[in-house]
Length: 252
Ligand code: 13P
Image 1 (cartoon, rainbow, N blue to C red):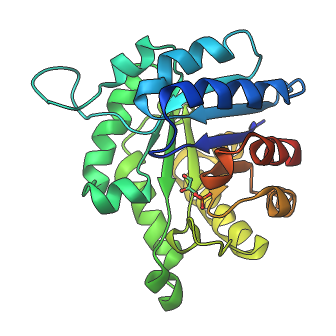
Image 2 (tube, rainbow, N blue to C red):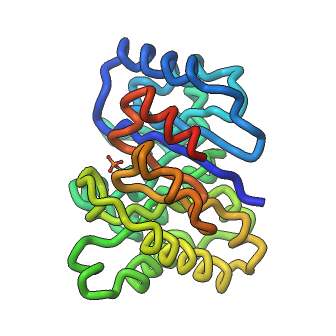
């Protein structure tokens, strides 16, 4: 069966020494993470190696990056490859976050290439999708999100798809305090699972973790995670405070 996952996306926050402190604080308050669960901490690139060393030996806690480049290596100044991420000890990478789509013009096609190279290098992909406020208001969010998933993931084999986690993050809920209601989250997550089932079969769809992201906090996490198709969360702001992140992990 699918795993429950809480992943923290630090975004562009936290300097090197503070990163060590934050991870140690998170770990110190963490009771054993069960086999069926996973905690993933996704700091900026500069933290990856240190973070991987700090969580080493803590079961079911691992490290992820927030992006990788489409190419394997070469003259791409400022970029970081999937192989480099893997070499730090990180196990996952977030791809397709709405902030990267918006500020760095990442298209569904470019994301398909990033997904490929991440999987080729043995990274688990946390693939983000989600609609803007105008799309939600027009009522076309289901087909929009379906398009993002089809264009960036549906070239994958079922074997590859088994290493992909989907994160539904409605843009209007990110950093706004406007969390999706549990009904809105459940409806979309069920839709995403049905889209995966139509392409890859019900078993693979049932085994795929689908996370919710967008103003998820210790106070609303339990209600969101209680939805049958919500398998955990991708947490931004609340992952920067050890107590809040621990509270969300406890809700899982
Ligand atoms: P917030 O939890 O700060 O709304 O951010 C969500 C997010 O974008 C995680 O990737």
